[in-house]
Length: 456
Image 1 (cartoon, one colour):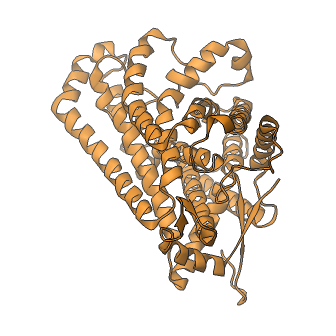
Image 2 (tube, rainbow, N blue to C red):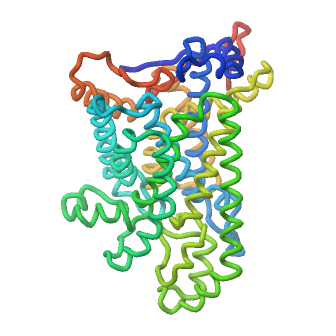
């Protein structure tokens, strides 16, 4: 069933006021009915963050990594690693939404477990269908997401504090475990996996998706933990969102600083000494430190774990990219809470198209991968990127305002919702147990004011 949230400008006005009074309007830890417009505005902020992450990921795939001098371009420096991490953190927020932003009781767990399992399988199937794509152009993240969702299922039964502790433990321990396992496991192919690998060598495929691949689910589970905690506790009041912003900025700044200090004082010397056993020559090591890796680091010395380059999966990389994801989400949530009418409407010109794209990010991501691997992609990098942005955002906004949920989002929701109801078998209404603030996925229709002004 498609559930559409209809927002008028008056709704957004009431949302801004309700956000200021959210704490006072809470009853027994749950938002009151009068807080509903604020909940709708929160959805706008979350989807806008998804949309921003999508456009950043398209930039990483479409635009050059290096300039004429061989140095990372500014967009690669800004977005590489951070865009994909933001998707993973927001996936954790989505899991919180699917479980009513609270811990799932064991006695009521059959429905959520079925929904998450089927959702993971559906996303994995879409990812495997894209296995024909050239991995040198873009690595398809969806099969990795499928494994992450399956690994995250036990988390929904844990109290929030224990989810947070689990995330910290995973961020610290999973890179160490990966460092120990890599020399004992087969070399990953780094190809985009397809159904052939699934049926031909499922163990090797699962190993790559979990430990050795570009987005190893074992270490990326830390992102889902962060998103699940945020989705449960940090979306209600402005103070909580400000704390999230401060924490995100602190992590995003402190981790690179710590990496720089550790490498300059100790690590680079050890990495240089062990270079013959690292599998990289001096030039390749310099490129690795500047441009990042493919989900892991060499295992010639433990000092590689002090690196924070993109897609290295080190503790500092995980902390820095988690911080940037939290900061992005907080900025979008704060932007959706602006109270003054004129600035709010100006901000909406940016937020609404981003939220439209973010509300159907699975569809647009799939379209992006297909476009990049088709004859249609005959543009130079910058025009090609701009063409994708204009086409995707325009399509998303038009679809959002008319049909509602994106095509692939609708498919995944129908089958996962059916699995949830079948597993529950208790006659509850469709979507029971899901947060009224965030039935996933969802759309918004924004009705323009009577003056005839329409959002861009």
